[in-house]
Length: 327
Image (cartoon, rainbow, N blue to C red; front, side, top):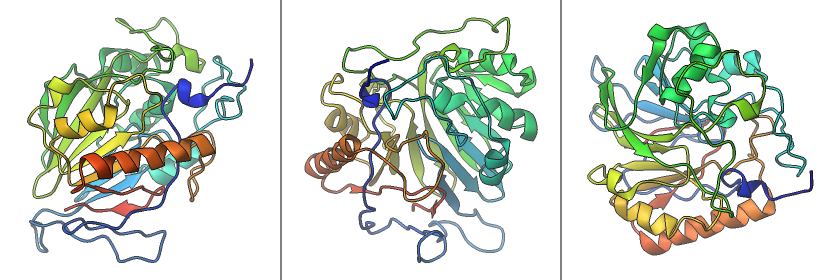
């Protein structure tokens, strides 16, 4: 297969420096020489709400610890090579799971939020769910794939968008969303699964997109955070969300009109934007994140656009597994 720009297939991969935090944004970095994670406003010692700590798992993946509980968003830490970065992409790359790396980084989650079912979002989800009894929240396609991998039906929560789920110390609002489009106005591995596959999927092409969701998570006593897994959106579906923090994938192409300005306006100009889905997710989860030159340029353009259209918003480019708190 001839070499191609992997940004035409998925979203972009870029790198950049962490910009200075704004007033009211509390950051901590265990990997760098920084202060410990700082409690959020409204939390206190002796029984009140504990701080929510956010750790980037690469790509659009997150581990969030709220008090004594943990939830995950699109956890993919196996990060196997498909040839996507080198230009020798193999669409039938076998699915593999790095159980050791997963156990090292994801903790014991109670919930896994899955935006869509492509391998770089879903691959590790079945192992995590079966080994920890975590609940999987995702589309019908996501849930049917999970069944094929042996996840118990009782651990699956199919959603469409519009659901508001109370998990005790945080609330999850499910938002119907869109996957990004490549330069040909298409996407890799489209399609949905209306029923459980007859056999367990064996390669990445057997994990279709299956519709895309976004999630707004509001930590009780803490921030509201908007998580996206695809760099497109339904503008009308974002009305009234107004999150404090938005985890936004860098766009893969110019196919989506006015992506950043429209998105920031729709989200009422969040105080903090964290760009995601910019790293090379086919290499080990090790700092500093790797990215190609074209992707670095894309991130720089993203940051410049945020500064121009929403000057009150700060952009924080995360590093892997680094604890951040927002408040």
